[in-house]
Length: 240
Length: 257
Ligand SMILES: Nc1ncnc2c1ncn2[C@@H]1O[C@H](COP(=O)(O)OP(=O)(O)OP(=O)(O)O)[C@@H](O)[C@H]1O
Ligand SMILES: [Mg+2]
Image 1 (spheres, each protein chain N blue to C red):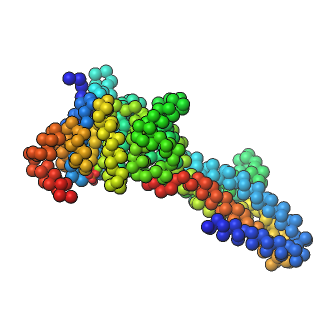
Image 2: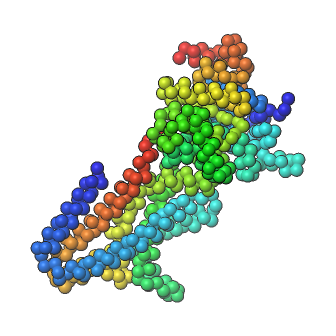
Image 3: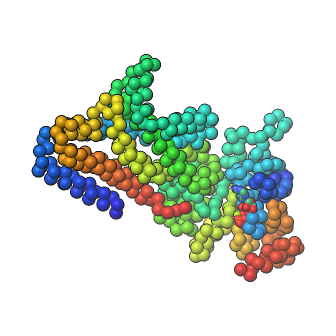
């Protein structure tokens, strides 16, 4: 149901956008905005993969029986949740070179955004793993299934669908947060709008287009997440 | 007589200050069907859970087929058991839970082949063959590609029994296997358990409130109260002429209900 509403909303936004595009003098600033949008999409996609991977690896690592693994994950989560993304970006781009580590603007942005959101995602994954009923562990012990196999075959497949709503919300937040990458010299859509506004003074048109583009990105993630969740939980029903 | 199949030697289980099993002495012979009855909180489930190694014990030794479960031999001394030792002894025991605990993301068939493939390292084709046989035995051959959510409670419990048997245990533990079921589904599960009991190839430990069924299938019934066996005996004798006052009270309450 919500999926359908989201789809309709996205379509409406697109049509409104098309109307605005047709009736205003968009041509002067639209190409610059679209180039910004491409940067936003590129950083978002790359960061999202890093974010999801880190969320699962450290969210599960946090529950490991092996102390160094558990601690490493805990430190990562604490550090990246407790510091601001903007400052992390500055560190990757301006501070690390002082230690001889040179990162391109894109690499710094992807690392900063991905690692920052990975730390939040880890908590979502940890919650989903903890939400798998205790009886599943007991069944696995009674069946003598080795611990790592049990994690991989019983717990994670049941945790993944539970993480989807949380992770797709965080992914939307992450897309919005990529606006900060202009701090490391990237011209993303937000920064492109500011620049274009300074040149053309078409405040309403420019920021309306930007707003709708962000909205479309968010709807795309929400729609994808809902589809994936539906697909993965189709057989699950309520058995516990 | 050979070694008893299961032997609890002064087993103590505590949760904090609460003593749940109090220096329990308890033996089950090979091929014996033993039912545990008793009031709520008397430690019935705990007996099965410590035997299945779902819970550690604080004192005593549990023996399975002449081998210690929570300990292992180091020369002629008993030392705390390693994970590998526990795994090897545990492989002789299977358990059926009150709430089935099927894997919800796997079909009936997948539930039954998971452990044989992951734990016994059986080739998949062999595991499937065996699982199909077992599902046939519990009358669910036609439901093999159904997910647990698509099965009734009684069907789920029968799959859970097939899943436990797929690991070829010698000992099967049942913890109130019909308590979570609607009344009309109790019969189909009891029928399967009855068959297993009459096969005489399994040692069975059953916790149930179904007194009629306990009487029918058990070689022996044990009445638990406060973590100890207060009275035990052949079912006819125990139900007809109980000696212990608390057992009399327990039976009169059950029969009234
Ligand atoms: N994880 C636990 N933590 C603390 N106390 C526990 C735990 N599990 C069981 N107990 C306590 O141990 C005692 C024995 O519990 P057990 O589940 O063995 O009883 P039972 O005989 O199976 O009862 P029922 O007929 O209600 O199933 C109870 O007093 C219970 O509250
Ligand atoms: Mg119980």
